[in-house]
Image: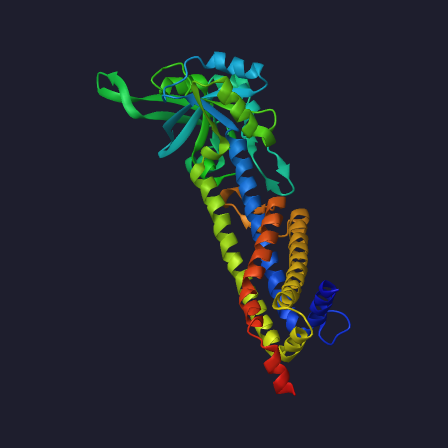
Length: 417
């Protein structure tokens, strides 16, 4: 009976003199909680979207897993390793990485050049395939030209869109490729290694910094610039299912214990770490907004307890304990918090769904043009925000609840009398 009376009084204090709804004093608290929750879910969803978008761009440019030797040496037995990986259901491509100079006319531009086996590379990366177009957003792939294995192996080169712009290069142009090291002895002294390659394709990796420096050349040409050795620097691996790439990574580590295996997050670790850190910082900043809203709830409860001292004293005289009265205001606060969470999560989810469906908000991405603001809602964020909201609400009402214990029922009744 006593429990029912406490719950009844909690709803009564929320509605005030109204038959239904909340009293005007509680609407500001409810609005603050709702806005705080909405801001948290929106920020978390957008930062999740950025993280997944960057993940897709990194994986689309490189691969999901990279294999190299533990001691940092080149991989001479790469054909056997590629066949071994393919037998286990993986796609694999050996890569030779060189830092070269590209020259056209009087323009010289540095490039991070990847020596590849074209058919194998196209199985692990979408950069050298036709672009994947979603709406108005060109994600990754060839923006000009076509790549055939025979023509590419004879002396072709694929340039990033930004790199081609710096060189002023077009399809069919001959590019002079030079090693920055002077290692070829001649009668006139040491000169760099030089090759002339034909521009067969221009691609976009979806990342401006990649487009401005990356190029692809035949595996044999890359070996020529790498001291003539026929060995790969590493092997890029694509798993059967990207959503389970971590599981496949662990499987490969057991299969190839003598080799170093890294997942996609380490390929551009500074960029990925920056996005994760930014999500944490933005979440903390938005959390302060929610804490400010909880101050309003604390002030309202202190005001209510002060105004209703005589009523609370009378309730004590009728047999309600301090614990019962504390439960009364606790229930009242949790009801407000629950309503705020429902409204905030509902409104935030609606806004994120609207952005996901319509793509109203666009962002500039340098040379790659504008992209739709990425959004990804995750269940873990909803659970975390709900738990944090309830925790802050409980902490914010501890001070007002202590005031209840200081109410002297006998003294208040005497004053009233």
